[in-house]
Image (cartoon, one colour):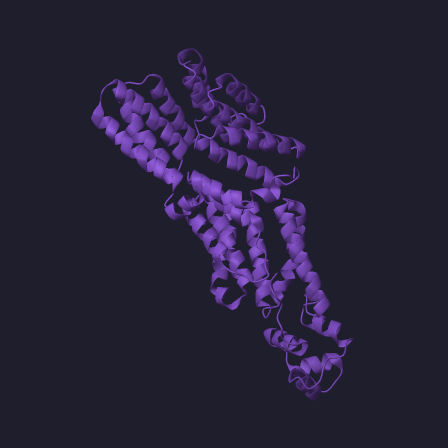
Length: 432
């Protein structure tokens, strides 16, 4: 936690007096003493009497502000409680304490406490999805980075990582998280969510090997705790990355645990995620019947038409194609997916691409090669891009179209390089 100001009580009141435009004469009048006594107190030669403190706080409009040592200790404890509320998504309690703790903004000399308050405020705003407001708080705090403690600098970069993640800029988010991770703070244990969020950035960027390496750094801390929300997230995210690189066995093991955690926590969305990802794991294992069963179960946990629901329809079609069942079962699902995704660009493109794949000819192949795959690479959806590359390679091999096949091989090589190394070859080689 950041440190409070070390200045004396007399100096605090002097700074507040000047900030409020109040003279020593007015203070002396309120305390029923001579001006010279106030002058001596502000020079450090005398001290205020305990009974005078509440009078001064009221006069300076800081009755509820943390000025005395015990008040500061209590305020710091309240900041920590506020962070816990936000972390545990207890939003009503977090919003209530938000107003109470804003009193610190009246104490301009408390730079670290003010900065820390702003960092937690930014986190709350992000949780409330008020991204422009959070961005404004963080932007206004940048000028103070040289004046505050390392802990606050760390929290600033951590929040910048979160902000850019919310905005969908995972590359910039990753850079900020890595900057936060590089800050060395003696005696301060960084939040494990930093490592998880960095791993999540790698996941969203399609860099599966780096994601696995990063997430395994903290996995053992949460692997046996069924009530841990972060443990639930870790199981799912690790499993997704194992599936992407074709390792279905560790993925299944993680997802069985994730399913148990999600049910224990009554987490409907993550129960759906675990079931959906189990479907993907069994598809990789070529157990298509079981994969379809899991996909069907997962649909019951999502809202019809939301992005998760659409993703399951997409994955189910991929599974049916792999099982050799094309027109009879795929077309109804494809029509439903197309109808439900009218306002979702991502799934419009995916379902259109699947439509081309189901009736693959030279025109459809060109669409997938020139439109689908580049778009998926741009969106960092490398696993899906790799799937379409493999399908095109099968098609161009059957047509003996060496030129087109070579183009696809080049795209595939770039995708695999990023998935395996992600531009961080040394770290990957060290851990593989």
